Amino acid sequence: MKKLNVLFVIAVTLIFVAATAKATETSREFSNFEITPVNDLYLGSKVKKVWTINYGTDASPITVVKHKTIEGVVYAVHSRFFEISYLCNNEGFGAKKLRKSWCNVPSKITDAVINTAELERQRIISPEKINDEFAVGLIASYLPSLINDAYTHLLN
Figure (cartoon, rainbow, N blue to C red):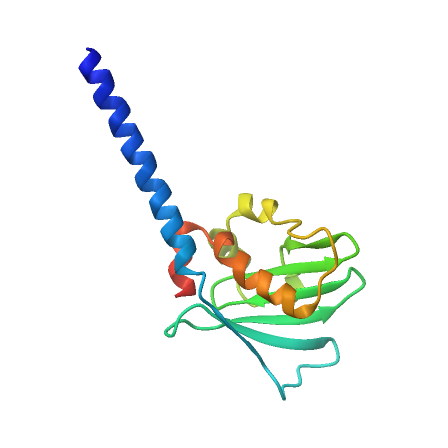
């Protein structure tokens, strides 16, 4: 009986270590990204700047669009399969759902792709206002953890 308990503890430990290693591998997978400002593009008076984020050579880029609103500066993040936003104002910088009027992807698809628990954790990433370059860098860094594990391939 004692031998069975020891084997059980070893098995549980191995599973935990394997899961931790897999989570670390996923984090490293998205640590390399390229941010490119999009110039000479007019999208209307409400759009202030546009960037693209690439996590791999074969990936379709993620587009980040800067809007100034009454709430503050909104960085709308658009992909073919999900949309999310990051808000920067006097309360800080953090993630939130994108306004429905700005969405092109059906909300059912976005809801399946985005991890709601992680979205809640990212509500406040920084307690201060930050500049555009830092904001887009934080978006590129934090966005992969917002994606449910079954959909991380959408960033590659």
